[in-house]
Length: 430
Image (cartoon, rainbow, N blue to C red; front, side):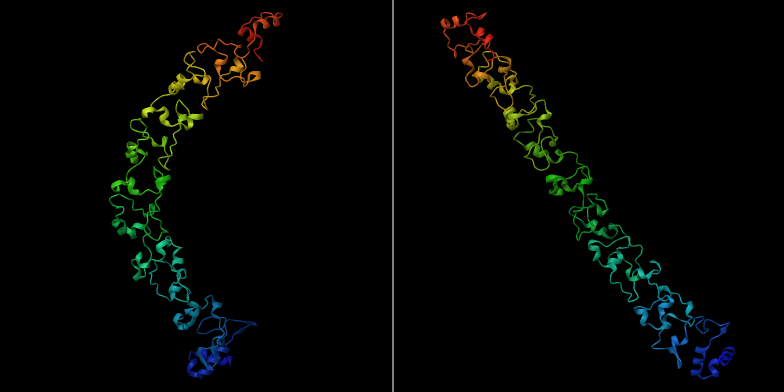
């Protein structure tokens, strides 16, 4: 059989000399042996390493329906549409080894190679249709977010009908220029807005709201009540080119209309932040300690008008007497005017309260707040009968000693005299 088959091949007239069935069987058994080593079969398909019966039956050249040939072994698995197509669709000639495995060798590139040769990035062997285009698009330079995920492809890819997608613009205004030109609230053109839409609009949003604009990137960050205010409240007449650097630019009318206290007559500074915050107008936060007269004690709860009479907020206070002259003049226990007390109130009083006084009577003079005299008196005049002279004092208003009896009792006391200052010399620490 080997000799017969060889002669048939050499003559080149194999199909005319033998019956068709014999020829098929002859080709399938053709094996050339050399030094005991098997070589690849020679066939119209070129050098292959598979037996003929792997694909063909003895009675026909057509592919066997039960052919055990596994296409995966040649590096190209038949999946999806490839599994259902005929061999001739890809293999235009019998020498299979020449067939390329890339898609464009068999399929016309409708994208005209603008997307490269890697068709599998978008397509699968199952179908040319792309069921997960949104997910695929996320790997491009323009991920589909917000409304873009549900927009039709042709909205941006104007050449979609020609199956061309490369070169589509990625800046918002290239697709949304009509939206920019048609905006009226506010008018983007007259306001001179940037065409960088993402400066105000969020790409993830489902509608054209301006909630994405970050005012904190400007020279006037929005805080407190400013966060909820309408843009037009400050940007009157659509003027968005205003450069704000202080509160007074918007709140001049509030400044001029304030009566409690009157800011104009009071000559208040236009720097509103000295007294107010952006939360509200009513809760003032003026720090009086920044002035020459810090507020302490009872002064912290006093009404401003108590000192700033007639709305005069330009007063420069240096001492207590400026406000408390009436308290000084009206004091009767003791009388401050007649003895000529100092106007420096802090010598005796603190800002907490007028009484008790902080005059250091015990430390400097006679102990009246401690020792035996604590709680034994109520009025200064009990010891100081002359209101105009506090250097004059008497012990005898409380201690009614009889000189006739006291003189003998002190007969052995050097320097004794029936006189209050003399008593004080010996009894100062009782």
